[in-house]
Figure 1 (cartoon, rainbow, N blue to C red):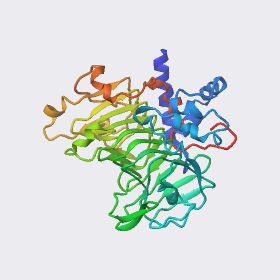
Figure 2: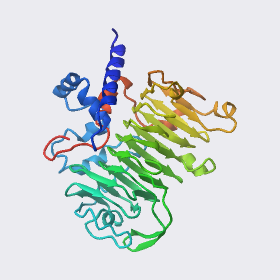
Figure 3: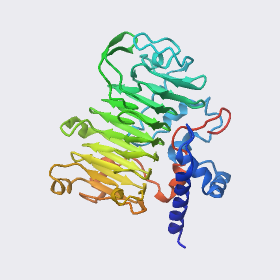
Figure 4: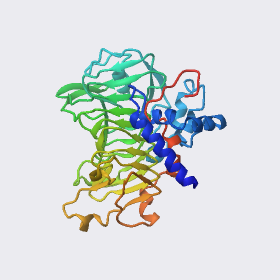
Length: 403
């Protein structure tokens, strides 16, 4: 048996194990997949090194003093959002109060009070928290929300808005149950507040944001999108996240007529798209999208879609279709003119593994030069994703141990 065939069998074994495993609240299906399937292979790898080939994780997770060296994470980014430094150059802000959310006059010690400050801040937590936001959490520039070390949830209320700001890192937060809120006074700066209209109910809404990095979060069950990026947002990396139980996962681009999104560049890397996802992983308009080294399992409509001529560079992903023959296709294009229009859109599949009948409909040019603006990092072989994406989602980091 060839090495490649063996890799296929290993991937299938791991995935079938994951399907049968029951999800724990903050344990990703990808983690279950790694720990229950092929355990001896995982042990052999650990004996050699804690590194997995995931360049983000390999940059910091082997350090047993990660808590002391938290800000090292800011130097580990990859892709189009790699320059996001968050609050690296500021002080630590410790969130001590999980309740008492006051949108108009945030109380010191709360997450809302931290994110609106003008100065850079690296925001951490002092105990497990489920934060129920009354209104959207409007972030100021140069902020990191770092949930490592505790079970941090933003749940069952308003969620995160990144609007016309830059240098944001969100890491290690479980975001779920987000609902529309608004028509209320919300403070977005220490010295400014105003009336906000109704939100869409996204988990994370990026609106005109630049240098944004969302890493190792778990997202599920929101009213609208899990992560949406619109209105000229750019320089974004969405990595190592676990997404599940949702219809329209990610929207990239405001509308077909909003031409400012032609400058959008987004890297989507090392994510695990798990059970109960229907579509939009992502759905793209205009812009350039590097979709690299992700695992997709059993989408209910399609995995990657788009309109308005986006450039989509799909590299080194694993696509595992469900058993329904009508959902085997990875791609979906929305075009009034149909094939005559989209045949020239540059969509390629390079080194992807297509399992259980999955197939990717390519179009446009195949030359690498056509994808230069949709290339942001080196793709690892898809056969290695059982290791590279095995810890997608919120990590169980314990102080004093490598994470």
